[in-house]
Length: 408
Image (tube, rainbow, N blue to C red):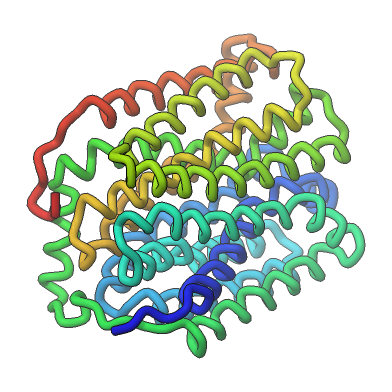
């Protein structure tokens, strides 16, 4: 089967991930409005924001089975309609309980946006092309994150939360329609598997050392990056940096722009270097190692302009997205959906736990250990750096034998 033009291959999935990532990080920009309008506490804000990650994580394994069985196009198009419903509910919700339900629906509805893209790319592109193609999808996700900063803050100021989420719903609906009517579909092996065979493939992934040696650091590094970027970096700028809302908005904007550059740059770098014999795992390890150094620098709270620090945080953190291409190459293409949703389960479980728990942890460090707010943030950041560095060492120096599901 001849490969279609790259635009209809990538664009519908990229728009879906734009929609997904924008909604993931939008609360960092509208947090002051939610607190002022609804009286939500810091801990309540963390829960409201992170419930996205909870439903997202819970859906990963069923979605992995569905992607490999029914194909990425149909699964993503259907799920995005659930996210559209969540946006509409968030737009009209006036109580915290309603907003929690809406945010949960949004998380469920966008839970397949990236994983379907990676499976789709694995079907149509070679393993050497895969990091770059995945990078393009990640770029559009980060463009969505960019839009969720200053532009969304302006839109909320102009039309209120209602207008912002109505606009988001229209984007999600457009992405779903493009997936149904524009995106090509390629026959795949998994559509002929029985449910029992489908489940056996998932079990074999979790029994594979080739999976766990990378998935552990991937879950911690990318999961913590998502949690911090989606809420707590903004709060760190306000509470430790003492920045006003305009300055925070600018720093978050630079963070998202740098993340978009990182998503594309790391993918392109891995693809180009692989042609010269440099393994994508080496590039991934370099990115994660640099991210650890940035976390330590943030903990030290140096006299560096906030946009520089947030840009460095995002630029290095987005190198973590290479984990999907590295893991995909370790398993047969027929398992690509289940492999990537399995690691995504870990990533989003960490993201939920950290984003929901960071507010409580920071309060505990203050009340029980007498730490000031800057000291509490320092402890949090140094703890993250230490855990990521430890698991990264395992990923880089362990040489796992191929597991029962592995292709290499």
